Image 1 (cartoon, rainbow, N blue to C red):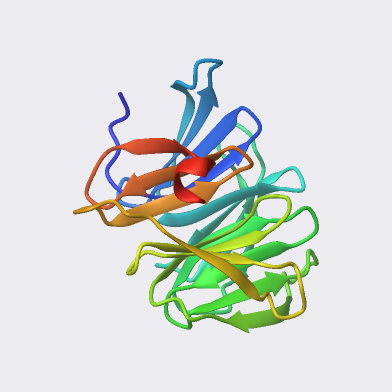
Image 2 (image 1 turned 90 degrees about the horizontal axis):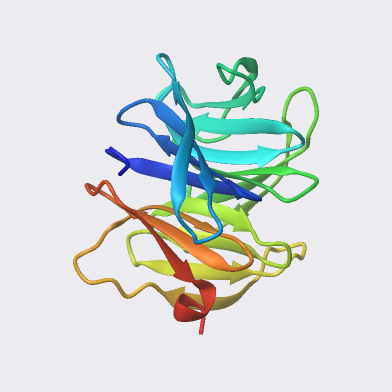
Length: 209
């Protein structure tokens, strides 16, 4: 059983699931078993970081921290050593994603999604406004981009075009639940809830129909 407090960031890299608990200032590296169970491989204590978003890309782990307004690049080693730190384009970064070429971030305060170049400054190449009330996540599933509105409990599907056009929306109808963290891969939707030490995995077809 995980002793979770407030998981806001989730990402999956093959058989490895990464979780970040900003309240405990911890990052969990978990292995997904053949039967769908999770086992903790490593727990990383981030004494000076409050991670709220997490992704894996280009061989590195990336986190964002709303407290310091930073996006950090980590080596996946025994300490998740920070090798670079960048200023977030917004004052309240809330999520990160990697699409195979670029790092993307999103921000609660501006309500915008940002596409960064993978250069020495993590330069913002483009920004996209959204209609999302509370933007807590942005993801790439290999075909579409997805943004998450925790206030309305809605997932928005975006085309890979110059406007990041919305082509669908899906309600996550979970009464008396408030989304904490969420991640989509090709098969599943992983969800955590505010105030609950629980992570739930749904088949995509259960939500995206």
